[in-house]
Length: 437
Image: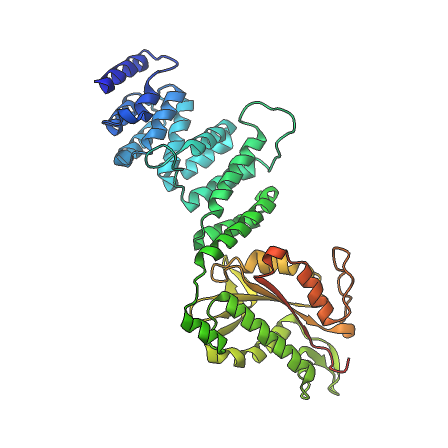
């Protein structure tokens, strides 16, 4: 009886085209008026698609929480958005936003067109997205697809640069910093998802030049996502795996693989400096008398290193690939891949490369360790050519002294890694100078 009275009063107010219609919020949200709610909401939307904006928004946001009317709601939305339907522009924008939520692929192109023409449409979209809920319509945020999150971040982030809140008191909710807050909320939501597609999407967003003002925030979100992924995907090895790893067997997990690789790289460094077969010459060009002249190209040095590593990893069924494929079509200098699809990237540089001091963060960590199979782990490897390098070593940052030995360079590079990242990012410097130097 109460439900019927509410509905009768609401319809009288809608028919008489009142600016405000009391009772719709109760009918949509009151816990004691759930009876026949789906049918009632659909009926009101069908008969009154041009209802006042506030009431129409309440009806539409309620409708998307009712899965039993999703198909009817989609068909009704398509009908309302036809060019000649007698629905006001503000109301059509609300309908379009709801269409975007329930069928992204069908409505995304129209959303782009409207956003280009009218900034007011973007603010309506922001409001609808922020207020959309799933399920019972109370507290569960709407379950946006990864594609929808990516779309919203790009759409709003390219229109509104990252803006700080002013220190003075400001009014309204359509200021540049309000749009910034919306973009960052969508980034935060995406960063809590640790599936492969979410990781790739966040990396693509970091590389988008039109989102440059949000790049630092995106990188911070990606770091949080990587940490969350490592924590959730880490599998505690069983006793057999632990015993096997301790007995020089297969690595139990990605951290074991990194530790084993570092040990082998250190052994190779010792071998280069101590063997009497002049292994160090493999990394240099020579004249006709066998005297070293200048360092070989970076790729050649990498290939020689791989030749030295392969015999150590072959018994463990660990493949070593040059230019190994990494997520979003990037390629690391070296990738170690084992039978359980753990992937360890290694970034290689010579000691005079212009990016010597930044490659660990900007290449290894930003591009390669984000691969889901790497789980945030990687190794930065540098070849030390000493006094015979053809160019000067770039000046170190942070008032660090310029290294004079391979060990000093390794210590300096390691000091640049953030404390919280030093358990997953490692630095190895291999001395390939003539042993008597």
